[in-house]
Amino acid sequence: MAIALLLIDVQQGMFMLSRPLYQGDQVVERIASLLDRAREQKVPVFHVRHDGGRGHILERGTAGWKFHRLATPREGEPIVDKRHSSAFQDTTLHEQLQRSQINKLIMAGMQSEYCVDSTCRAAVALGYHPVLVSDAHTTFDTPVLSAAQIIAHHNLTLGGNFAELASTEHLRF
Image (cartoon, rainbow, N blue to C red; front, side):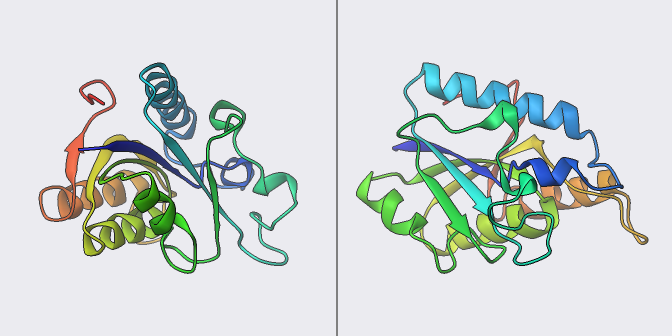
């Protein structure tokens, strides 16, 4: 299987909100570790960047739209800009992966219940084998559920049914 690392919405704006991401600094450090390991092993890396539209913290061209400093793409690493939760909807991601003959996606990023979930499910529907890095995706607390509960729920729901689960420590490219 040809493998790629897919980093979803690891952008500055996710760290600029008044409510903090659950373990945001630790998660982005894990993502940086995955990125370093992928680069060392010559695994292709695809960066997904969300454009939330005018007035949104992730509005194209604003400080929030930029990649987090620990997950900045290098020259030659594809960047896929999106406007929807799924990184596949109305983007060139599927075509780029097909051209590169990628069929296994190591996935990490933000937010667990939105873009990570949607992209994981779409990947399965398109015939990819997703591997969700269980400790390298995060979200925010809500009035109904804590971020820790949301992350645990998505690991349980996606793991086995839609994705293979692996922790940063145990992941092998």
